[in-house]
Image (cartoon, rainbow, N blue to C red; front, side, top):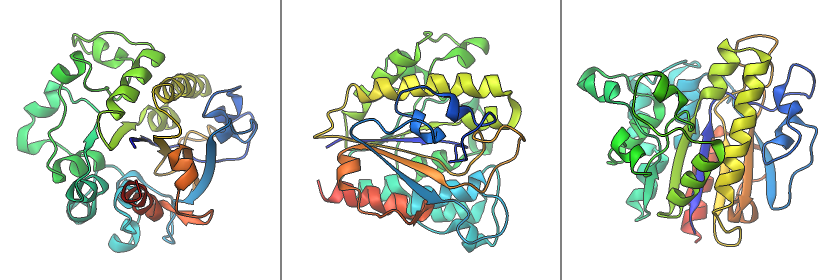
Length: 292
């Protein structure tokens, strides 16, 4: 079994309506997240609490740490922390991250995202996201643009438009082409993680039209990746760290529950019930890998 885990930043399950761009998706795997379209065959949609019993709006540093470790990170540090993980959160990730624990159990794991030369040029002073800390603490090399050009990685903007705007030599991809690449990469191991945070960026800084474009492209990307996987053999998980883009009436995060969208073996064998939090996702994935 190969598991593809797509982490989409800033996507919650809000009520349908004109300010929720997810409600405007007319089909595809992500359309049910808007509360209007039914689930397609083979999918299962659960809800996870992102507030974790801590007052305030969920944030990326603590939410991502909880998601990828199973540890209630905001409770550990006493608040929801935005942005990049501090030392306490980095220590939690180093000890308990999903990729490290799966690798220690003999699983072939990887992080699909490619990093730019500017990131590596910052050396020891570079700022590390939750997923970067997780990958490095698992002893995995970070992928570079050379890997991207060989078809062995996917950029955070899977079309590579941002890279080209920055002057990097990168092939422009359609969402479908990028999705096929991600699906093929997933088949090379037991667990592949990919992070997409253009959704959170659009929720903070974009218009409703920007948000809809981002979601439509993501919908096409995910649908294409699933075409490579076999539902009887492989599994797919998509979830988020907090809400944002589902309510475009403001630019802040939301307290909404986040989706846990499952497909294939993940949908059939998911060991956690309907009442779950972010802290249940990493243990559930480890259980899936153990039960293979």
